[in-house]
Length: 113
Image (cartoon, rainbow, N blue to C red; front, side, top):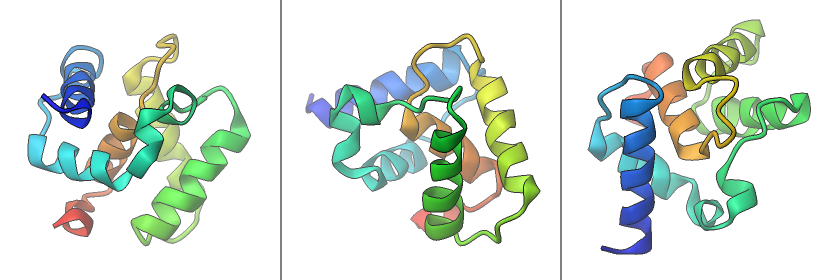
């Protein structure tokens, strides 16, 4: 098993056990690959959900640039909803898991088709 495959398995486990979702493994794999080399660094692999600047970065770089959504209050509401689903007390919120849930929330799976 490659390092990336091991990470995808870890993210799938988080989706199942912490977020109570059954992951679409094909989509999760594509979202993970889309994160690029950031998944291999402990710092950039996770999202600091308690830092407003970090959430703003997710909004600008992922939701607006990658998914092509219009900036508005519903974007931050969706990020907060995803963080709530993941669990505010959950220390490690993995970027691919958060991005996956945002893709599902906005029904933007076709971006990864």
